[in-house]
Amino acid sequence: MARQSISFTEPNDKWLKTQVDNQEYSSKSELVNDLIRQARNQQIEIDWIKAKLEKAENSGFTDDSKEQILAQAKSLNE
Image 1: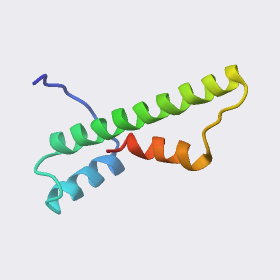
Image 2: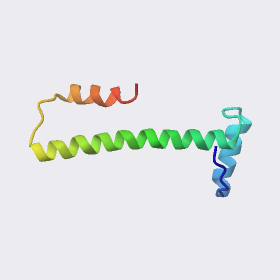
Image 3: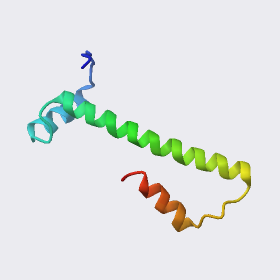
Image 4: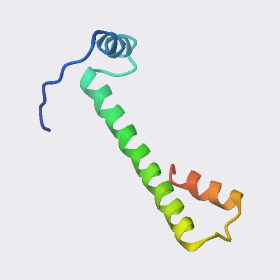
C-alpha cells in the first residue's frame, strides 16, 4: 500500500478523530480510504447518468419509463 502524507484543516481533523474515537473506524487511514471509495462509486454513478443524458440528448427521446430509469440507476448500487 502506498504511503502518503496529507494535511487536514482543523475541523476536518477533529471530525476524523471523532470517527476513530467512536470506533467507527480503526484509523484515520481506514476512514480516508473509505471516503475515497465512496467518492469513486459516486463518480461512477455520475458518469453513468451523464452518459444516459448525453445519449438521450443525441437520440431525441427514450422509450424507458421513469420507473425503468430509476430501477437502472438503483441497480448500480447493488
